[in-house]
Image 1 (cartoon, one colour):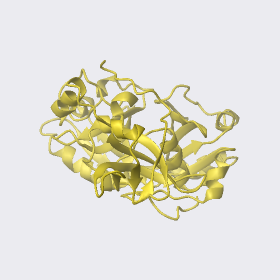
Image 2 (tube, helix red, strand yellow):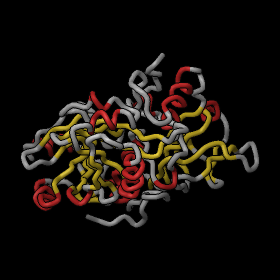
Image 3 (tube, rainbow, N blue to C red):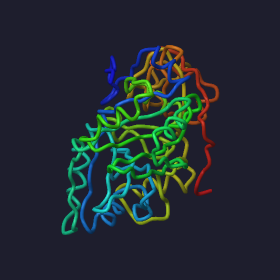
Amino acid sequence: MPEDPQSGAGGGAWSAPLEELQRVLHAPVVTQLDELGVLAVLGADAAGFLNSQLTVDVNAIDQVRWQLGAYCSVKGRVAALFEAWREKDGLRLLLPRELIEPLRSRLARFVLRAKVELRDVSAQWTVFGLTGPGMEELMQRATLECPEAPWTHAAQQDGARLARVPPSPHTGARLMLLAPAETADRWRSKLATAVAAGAGVWWWSKIDAGLPDVVAATQERFLPQMLNLDVLGGVHFRKGCYPGQEVVARSQYLGKLKRRMMRGHVAQASAGQDVSDGNVTGSAVGTVVIAATAPEGGVDVLFECPSELADGAPLKIGGGRIRVGELPYPMINPTA
């Protein structure tokens, strides 16, 4: 797979050649996502333990659910974002490799007498991102068990998992394939009719889909609602307690949701960089969540800031004016 000229892991912006970004607008593309890893949560008490630690109802994750969720600090700030699925021996969390050991260590403090084992199994998996017009037809030709609804997955014959995540307005269907490492070459051959591209293409499509990410540079900077996780189904408000739950609930129910994640385009940006109000010198009013090279040049971003500023204030990143765009989903309050 092609290397990205610049990695967005840990900070910075995801970069990709413009020709690759243009190609994904017209044809299916496959990217290898080596920056992602897998944390296994094993044992008889795995689901119950995770349910007491994460923002989602872990007990509701069945054999087809592919669940977006977060682990928060006691102050309700997101320390890790993940996508979870169930296996026979427990659950798996897909997240940036750089955050796996910090998350494993923090969860390990609370295991106590529970029958739970936390293990980094990233080396056992190869992760691919699939998107671009014609991807649905490619899946049919490859005779794969392809899930139909976003946030679901289907098991493949060799133990691989194929998950459908929310689509991009410009590239269409977005799928994630997690293949056992020993089968990766076989999967590359199976998907050979898709053009190989660098990871920056996948991360740009994620921005286009309005889906956040958390890396080392942005750990514990945001409440879940600042990343629109409540709208995206990444927070369950009727489950039991978890770290930071009281802060998250107060923000939801006491009318304090004044900061949201927006989408924009700017000349340059990096994850964790300040967003400023051009009307007030030196004022930081928000933070870049994720950034990636855009097909038109420049950088597309997801950023958080006070909601009222997005409609009129001249917002800037590093001196460059942000062209604020629309997210591809309605901002519906799930507890209204």
